[in-house]
Length: 414
Image (cartoon, rainbow, N blue to C red):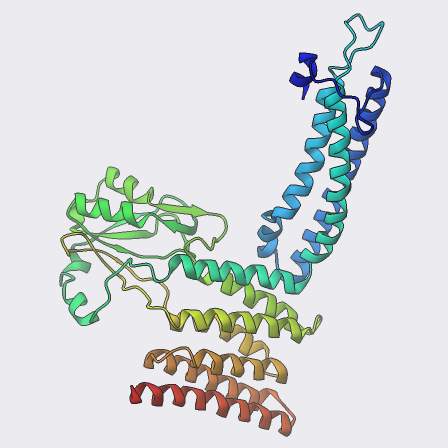
């Protein structure tokens, strides 16, 4: 804007443009700058209050969702950038008697006024946005979106070879545990991601077989075993550093390669909602619905084999990841235990199992779902004092079991 003004060829004389003198320009930009920094301070305060409410109601691990919210970033960025713009233009304005040649950047001042009008619109948006992002439905939807993105990102990624496990296990040397030596991790932290491609290159380059001892999402203690290397005689300081560099460790978990993380977040929201001091079963029901939707998608996926092969079809790495059984346990165990005395949540858990059952013909998955349905039923028999409530739960349990049987029959007919 200043470059346009300094050319002297961009004079404007419209009703909406600024055509005043230096003193008026200073007053206008000073008013805009002062109001913007005040509004920015208010917006920051509202954001902090929203963070406090989210931390107390939904758990501190959900704070990252607020910090990453694009709407908050745009709003605060607009206010701060308008303030800085006005300061930069103010220092260039010179009137008569200032000791400089008179210079009033009309285009720049007009742009400052335009930014102030835009900031008013952004403020109106922020008032609505701030009241929306702290609602339970919005937070649950965001976490559910993280789960869906993690599923799309990690499945069905071909990072292993499916097939009979007996054949693959036979390829592991019999003396693996005796000959292998550990690579020690050099610090504490949660495993956020693993560079599996680089790990495979290291194994191929050195003709090694590597067994990863932990997976993304797990906390690992300094000086504990990170990777077992076979043959162990090749372990050196250089190899230890190369393997450690393949692991990204941090203070918090991340959903980048940890599909269990968004599931745990939904479970945490539901458990806080079921706390007697809050007693909000409808929020817990929403979480169960989202968990059921995510598990329905996972039930249709092929979980990768833990055995990784190079281009020559030689076993190079063993990395045990998540399983469908483990994810269902993470999703349902905590809620089932807390909801034993809540009829509506218990029934919704069984409805979720019945819905998941319609998406899979895998006998192993069906056994997992039936086991959880049975545990939910037993818990309700002990936790619900009213006989009619127990009958309602029994009826929904029968529906879930029937859904599992229908899928088995449909598969047999094929």
